[in-house]
Image 1 (tube, rainbow, N blue to C red):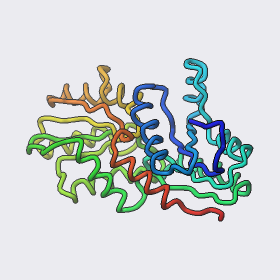
Image 2: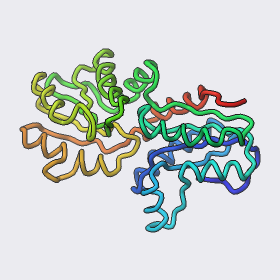
Image 3: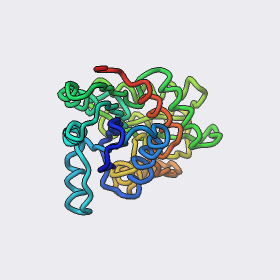
Length: 268
């Protein structure tokens, strides 16, 4: 999202990994950007994706142009913006966020005011707000029912955020909510151990990702033998799937908006 007419020299750069799936992009990334437009009417809202692969796919397949982070910052510099807030839609303070900050620091000198917000899960308050937002996605669970969230996961030390997320769910009274990852720890095997320990019979799978894209549609809910849905069904569980990314949840959007307000000042 970019506006050709620069009316106020203030911008919020909303950064996400991106997705090539149009439906979930509209429901998550675009919906969150719309909230930023409503909340910050004096700022231009600019979109950037960190995945160059997705940027390339959208350009070639759909003729949709999306900035990568460097291109977005170059655009803001060349258009004469004086104040920039970068707000990532990342979930954890991981590699993607560190690379974003590293790139952004190269452009600090070009702006009078420059701020960078934090990902979704940063403070203890963030975790609790996230639990309260996501709890609206499911009603009272019976003793034999559970919700399993699928996060992306990473080899970065920030992967610990997923285990902390489950801990906070349990602390706030949601005992039958478990969090696993596709590419980190815990994996589906560890989640299944927890399901067995708690005598769970019915599972609802939900993505713990901004968008319900490739991982949610295939790794979580797909019909292939290695999808979480198939693995759980073969183990005897009754499985439902909830194919909605975190970006659709208004409570999650609120956290990102708060983080933009609280963004750390790099230069002023």
